[in-house]
Length: 112
Image (cartoon, rainbow, N blue to C red; front, side, top):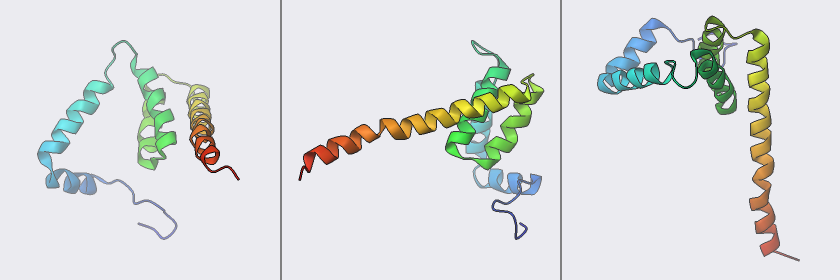
């Protein structure tokens, strides 16, 4: 990892090392992931756009790097990717605001 990088690069060597530590688990996860991203009621492009949006909400740089090019390969435009990211941003902000209801309830318990 370079000094200016926040997260290490994913390399085939690191992937193999992680897989070797829990081979049964990685096999199950890879099968699950493959199944989830297959076309079904939603096509593969939409699933990848959802993944890009969720990756931004969960703030997973590895997921962003993996699913953004996949979305493009499945036919998404750059505009669609960006719009999905804006949907994610709105949902994250909306969730923060919605949770203010909990804070309001707690503040009401402690009236001055």
